[in-house]
Image 1: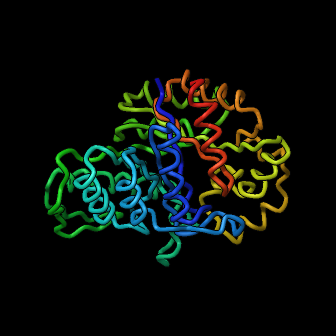
Image 2: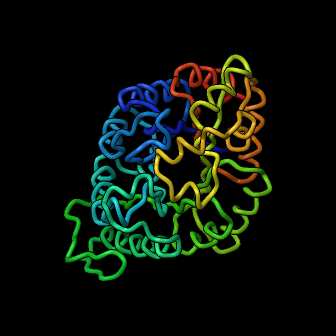
Length: 316
């Protein structure tokens, strides 16, 4: 049976309110949680961007849930710092943290002033970062010269069991590549046939571990309200790669002006019908996703958490 969790969107909600949301979600019956790790929101309408690693310590202390974080070592974070952050949290809260590692987006990574590399270079940099992080988790002293540079790094505080490193993918090709190194796979909701192809590609290439899915959704008491919330908050997030990788928030603000409400439905499960949401989620579980994280794309989380806790999780 799949576990259903809450996605905490730092780019949309103040961190104090997100902490309240995960507490509320646990009380409502959600079984897990995860969060984004942004330096900037996608669009100015979203308007927040708390620091994920500070927040995770508070969230792990405030609940008994397991937490994931989607992060991108290699530019904004040196991989040794990512490893240290994960190791410390895992030493304090054993078995409750995992990370999904991706190649990042310019909107967050450009702040270092370094060149934003092309995709193949970013993928190679991530692969080097994974090896650095795993070696540090193993207690090794690590030196490395490549797309990332490491000089005699060692983690002095280690958990008994290292946290799992998932691969973050939105394409079949990336899912297949993640199978080489990842402890699990995470992606976002998409048409069922595409998701099935990604699952098959990952498993056929020898991919191990859990399949996780982040589901963008919008629910409100009326269909019009649910669609209006999705359009106001998430219309800057409908663009496929490479657009979503390479633009800054000001650019997303401009191109989002031309996105219609109906176009948002391609990226967000929009419905006022809780039964429809349950059906969508059940279909994802039937594909083999074992951890399904629900991301209500509105900034107000309480009514969504209460409604899904009372009427959706029980059906699933």
